[in-house]
Length: 176
Image (cartoon, rainbow, N blue to C red; front, side, top):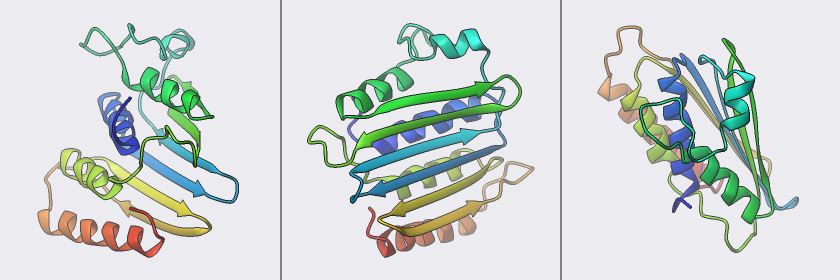
């Protein structure tokens, strides 16, 4: 289990980048009334064949150079332990969507406290990718869109401004 759910989001987004995604959309919804936390990461990368999708939750299967692919299996296990589940939808050439649901109040649910840092890591690490991030907390919504740069060069002033916007936006809706 990872110490913060934002690390799972980072892992999934990194997998999307490795799969050739040019667009990654991240949505987080915290709903205390319904006691549900939903995390959704969608991309337009290479997608998965039905065979790859069927094996994606096997910790000893990976399409990368590593010998194990623990990210999705650990997230699925964490969601299951916290009264939720993970679903995966993918189509070759069309991308992948990972959705994880958790019981928000579950005592074993890891926190979700590092989303500004996670998004900043993605912005710096993948300047060529369009990132969309939407965070809803009890009906209050914050969203941000960062358009990728074709040349892949990082505009540090832009990313720093986005970091300030992320922190202020998340604070404004009562999220970390």
